[in-house]
Image 1 (cartoon, rainbow, N blue to C red):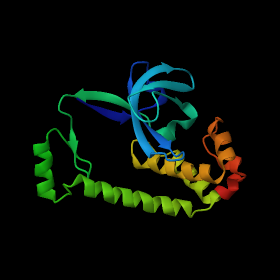
Image 2 (cartoon, rainbow, N blue to C red):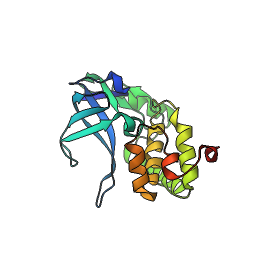
Image 3 (tube, one colour):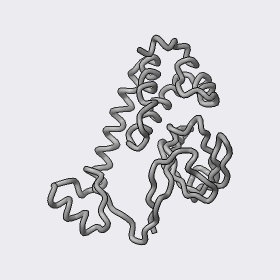
Length: 198
């Protein structure tokens, strides 16, 4: 049994809904960036409480409305008995492995998932290095650029998460103050004037 998830808005979730979301386990010996799944337990005006599926990070989680875009919540939209399969090279979805194999043979797309995952991990590491080399002003500017982008593109919340992770490393106090505020952008908490984001 497999579940299909799609990005969803905060208002779309109700108790009992299945949810998939992003966690950055960056503590000592942490797992890094991890997708978690669970069932919505409670919804308030500003939070969603989740009973998580079995994992190493605990059996409960809470997602705040202020953290919504960086947590990349996805709602289960369909459950299929045999699941769907997708091409790692282009993202096209197929209903069977036979159709996927035929597509990959025809297009020459990578069949070896491990090799494709290694390439993706290398690209992600390169992007993180580039982000780490940017100034705090540039990181705030980058976040401002991505703020209005649709989260239906999985790259947007991923990059936002990397940007926020870098800001948190640079000044955890300013980062926490921003995260626990109702503001979308962090520049004020990092001592950056709005005109410096241009």
